[in-house]
Length: 447
Image (cartoon, rainbow, N blue to C red; front, side):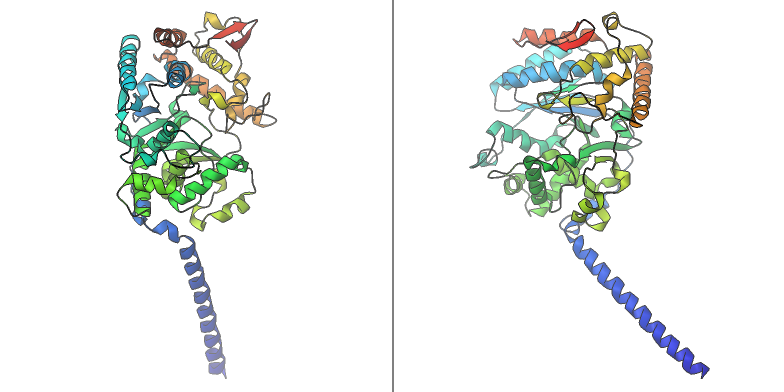
């Protein structure tokens, strides 16, 4: 009787084990199908072994522009470079400006620019590179395009940034971006990982939905969130290389022009930033520190991603752990240029070196609360994210930020308003007039 019971229980146990194995097999098959597009054609991309990049690695401040366009030259001098000489440390590395190879005006502008920077900013290194047109003109000029050939060229160039520098990290920026506060290592890195900001909150807009559709065409998997929400965008240089290699394999070609045409054509819209960083999310996720703003219910939003690539709470950030350092000037709903002078005054105040030009304006850390928005293009005028119990967090972060900057100034970091004015002067030399920031009854205004 005892043996019968044992044999019965053994048979039932064996059936239970067999049932569990079947369930697990089904789960494995399901998950392998769910992640199939991550395994082919670039399975090896997931297996790159990266050395930790020290936070003191050289960083290239990269900008693509057309020197023949006065609008581009004006943006470069008046928005980007005159705030960069204030808030971008010369010690971080060089600035690389990429121009059009076939344009004689671009070559003339390059000579003028390099001469001016060499004469007036001996501590700063600027390099100019020239990019040739694609061999196939239809890469940039095609039926149904919503944009000009020049605009399409900048989109095309965005996938080739790694070809113009050997530095480990690229600070990718548009020429109509202005710095708002001093850049520090802490605003770029969290340990060896590069900080990445992104927002899902803008996916309601049609153009962002179009970016998402084209990103999926390019990569074969969904765009994570909108990463076109902040500048500079810091990316490891070899991430550009790996992303381009992946796209070539995906479209089974060695010609990137051919691959690009399959991605970007007709009335499509593309955000190269979102393509490259979505690639990094899947294949190089551990190299980056993710700070994503999610406005939807996370579990529902995550249904678009395979199990191993879902967004976790650790990847999200409701309030930034570092202030934004720059903004896209033409697209901000609220004028942010006054924060340039506010940050200048706060920096020298922290260094124990108050500036006479700041004497008539009482600045406080709270004046820079707006810099805690994930997306400075879509802020609510008159409001900041630093409300309620978040206020103390913002004060603590800004206090630490400016304490660090003040210490750097005492150690020799240059943050001098005369440099800001010098860029305005050299712009005047080539017929460009920049607006100026002035004090009016204690209030900072732009004129």
